[in-house]
Length: 124
Image (tube, rainbow, N blue to C red; front, side):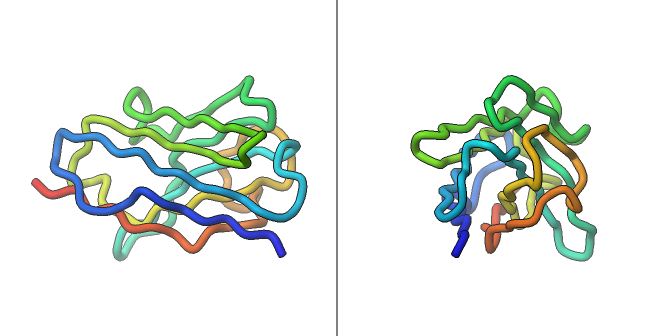
């Protein structure tokens, strides 16, 4: 059974930074793109970042561009998201996801395995 488990969320002060990690188990991890999405209360799920299977390509959502970095370690089956200059608008449940193919994508429909999500709250 394929699983994605996020960690690293919690309460962060505005202006601070965070690091989210996601570890995978199950199918061949290294050939699929990985992504991070988030969903704030009352809002639709929003794309945050995605990385290709071999880490040669990354894309970012407009709201986090220049503040976020996605990385992966295929040997450890992990994908990390680092964000800085956090603001209350970054408050959301963050999800990691494994793609259906190797290229990065900002579309949720291009991902077929999702973690349970981890909450991040940014206090002002």
